[in-house]
Length: 212
Image (cartoon, rainbow, N blue to C red; front, side, top):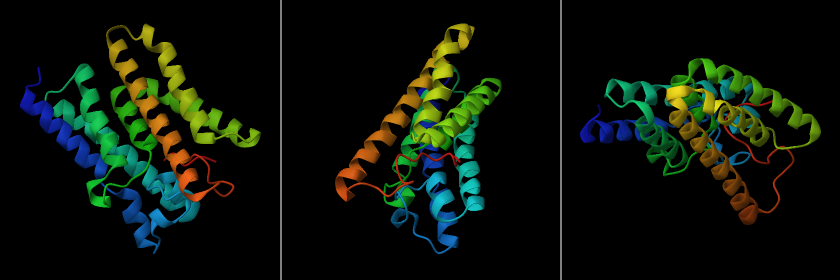
């Protein structure tokens, strides 16, 4: 059973891991200020489109690793069950408002996928498959790929939650984190559109997973 001190430490570790500016570091090596490119988000999708596919893939893996390491660190500190959601949420907050990026960041879908993979290794695979399939269909139908992909993948997770027995609460908790990520992405898109006017084609709602 985690103590208050270990839980607070896990939350701090989660925030610091989430704050690691992978997209900024990778883009800077290519001479690109990711906050001035594309959507201005420090995430894999923006790097993928404006720096390079290889570099976007590196950012995707790095951002997902932040979520995986957050869950592993929480377990090492004795934080189990639904309490893991607190350091997981802190990792997302760190990605959104990184202390190393002047409290700027991305939307956090890659980090969320890492959290899901660490908490539910087997369940994460069909979620990723369904999400990528929905994202691919969305591209050809003119819809927001990342929004539809994330919604489909975590919609599946919500559907199977009642059958996950003792982990139902944790499953639903991660679905709630997914809703937070999607809401953050939508609100960020609307804010950028309000500030800058309509975005260019291909620069609509973009989350961190490098879609088609």
